[in-house]
Image 1 (cartoon, rainbow, N blue to C red):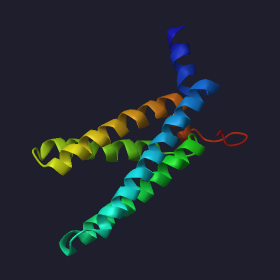
Image 2: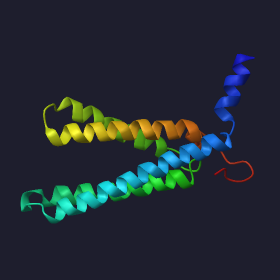
Image 3: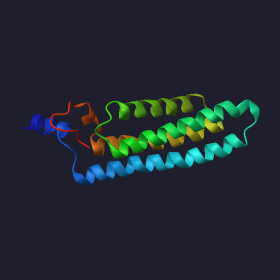
Image 4: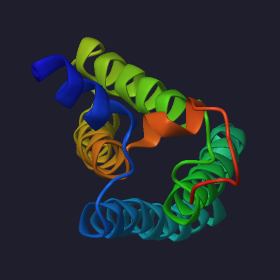
Amino acid sequence: MTTATASRIGTAAPTRHADLAGRALAAVASLATVVALVNGVLLTINAPDDRLFIEGWRVSSFAIFAGIFALLAIRPRQSAGVWELVLAGKTALVVFGVMIGNVPEAQLSAVIDFALVAVVATAYVLCRGWLAWRPATIGPTR
């Protein structure tokens, strides 16, 4: 009976409340990233020439991640691999930020990315993002 229950949990669609909560978390991640994007634009405008490219690169990354989080909020089970890529990428940034030590910019980024990992991982579980890997039978599940 335990095996059947575990198997059903792994393949059953999430409850409506869990799905809405997970989507809301992904939307919050998107909105938080938009705030970081706006701050990044302001930093880029005021950046010295030797930081201009890296600040521009960071801003473009914020825009991409804001879009990815929005797509995950809208279509959490039609994004095979996207959840996992985001979690792996953000986790790598946390590890790197911790490893390089006493760099103020890295420390703050590691803390923020750690919070994002927690939010995205929770949304992934609530939305059952792994179901995106399941082949569609009748129609796509949103």
